[in-house]
Image (cartoon, rainbow, N blue to C red; front, side, top):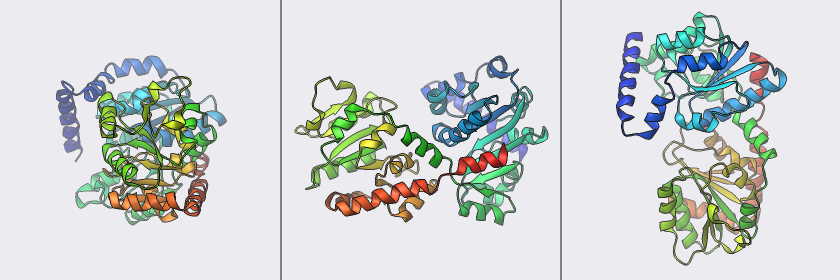
Length: 410
């Protein structure tokens, strides 16, 4: 199987090189890995006691971040290396202030793994959620370096638990420890003779900390202050269509803040094209001093970095990606007590089912479903207040993963 995996990795390299000829993201993926060995050596090669965190993208980084912050607070002399697989994660966090160096993970070949790990004084390594890389795992194990998988979730449908996936399953026996988010993952691993600890999801610690440090935004505050406001967080086209349809059909008026996951001009224009002419809307970038935002019905956040602070002013949230099993962060709005709507295709995100069972998360199948559920909180203040309390308690009751992992690993 090792030979087959090596061939797959090389084929992937060839394909992404071809795709990079016309795809900007693939091109950045290739460019970011050029001269990786010399760049890594110059930046961090002589540092001691390196704790390496590998994240696929931005979402996984947010799970690693509380542990990084805890380590730097308790042991400030620790050197931090953060690696990403995806350009979307690297480009947003390549200047992370607590990291000594942020880089792309070189492709998972035996030679790259050996060069990367042998060239550094790594004392501990952490792989977040789904990041299982055979050659890096084997090299860390060979060099007797403690390494961990944190905030992990496992499902029967994954390759580890298929008859053809024994080779991959055995890789899960190499880490020093695996920390999973839920009991279902632990049960599945235990059935396959793999040890783990249920620690929960460190994102709960992260979102609670972020909420406590929420930055005031007078523009969003003024817009939201007069009416019930639905925040469409990291919205995709599907969520935007449902929200606007409800906006125009509902006999209960509400306002909308759109914070699309794609803020390109073409996507923003797509939203604007769906807004009727008699609706008063404004783009965040067009707000001028003296404009009374309470007179507008729709605000479009066309700048990066505004969403997490926008939730503090909302009344409810509809988080994007849930119709495509690519659900964005539903914990951020829940921290502020907002009832949260999301699409019902979320098998990879256990927090969605947990929040639904708790009573303040609502997965949506289609328009009629959304219209009914939104109507309940628009019409009944007691229902809204109940959901606010449920979500605040939901977040509070699930914090503590960071301290548990830190105590066990550091």
